[in-house]
Amino acid sequence: MIAPSIIALVAIQLLSHGVKAADLPPGAVSRMTLKSPLSDPAAKIVKIKHGPYTVPANGMVNNAMTPKVALPCTDCYITAMQAGLEYADGTEANIDTGAWLHHMVLYNTGQKDAICARKSALKLWPQRIFSSGNERTLARLNANGNWGLPVLGTDTFGLLTELMNEAAEPKSLYLTMLYEYVPASTAGYKAATIIEMDATECGDSELPAKEGVYEYHSAEWVSPYSGEILWVIGHGHDGATDVNMLKNGKVACNSVQYYGLEPAFVAPGAGEMPSVDNVHQLNDSGHAHGGASTSMKHISNTAVCTNIGRLEKGDKLVVEGLYNSTKYAQMAGHGEHALEPQMAISFLYLGLDQGLSITPDTTTPVRMPVEIQGNIPTGFGCPGLPVYLIPNQLSAMMAFLGLGTGSACMQGGVNMPNLGSQIVSQT
Image (cartoon, rainbow, N blue to C red):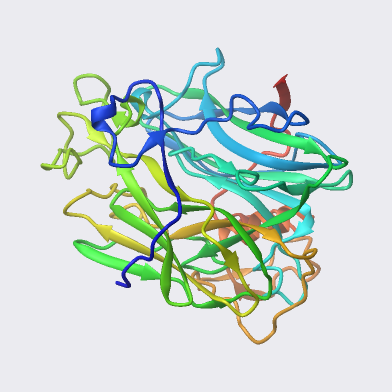
């Protein structure tokens, strides 16, 4: 492991309610939530609800794909984003009531992805705007300058959602998105983009979980862009201790993963809520290993990094995930997985020195971790031709682009083109 460099600012995202000061790690601040604009008088906040999703008892909604959802604004810059999960009455849905925002990925099909579009000769990858796990971490682009993700009137947002229910009865859940934005005409604002570093590169993000202490690294990525590093978030699954972003061989952002610092992220014991396959008996750290009797702590907070300098053209980035299943127990899996797959992803928002121009990079092949023979789905133009089965994220993107939604593309996912999506509040 490479020793971490000094980070200018690490803000550990903790709820201000339900956590005592003595419980906070050294240097921690209250969780940053998107409830009021940061400082810009031109900024507005909009909340959009997506759903309902009906999640079966002790089950999942797996890779639900909605190719078009409501835009928070047009001709604007998005300056902050945060995901949430709610019940129909607006109360929070979280692990303490059996509900998980397992994953969500928001795409803009009107713009191209900064990494994966370059790895595709056809440049088919839409821009990944924002992702979140159940830790629900805020992404803010204008903490240290006037930066935002541009949204044009011609853009279309799509959504990939995975929800889990550990309760003994079905749940009706709504995914929520909070956005802060400013009009594109706001003086001084410039375009940012997201660099999503993934240990599977442009694959399905899933890595086999192991026992003990281990780590995963992405391939080295050489940046064709230059600009200010605005915000970095690391994402892993239970068992992860750190998700680090390395720049030129040194840790530029150490995203520590914290467990159970808020009551909503602690699963009830067997006496409080019926147990399911992935609720186990606790070890000394308050995590599970085998048939539930008491509560289990899950990742609740992750350190984010901001004001950590620049990314220059030619800089080399790597994401590494560090895991310790003795310290933090891993989740039991579903289906063929004995353990829930791991992830190692770093979301880096970059304030660009100049506009984003995507040109194919044919020198670096895309590593596809899923190598199962399947068929190109109907609608691609050549149904029945043997190809490697397309990973989940690319499947969703193909659906967004109208290139097919057949089962070979879906990988067990569900298409939800008519999912409700509505603006419910705006300030």
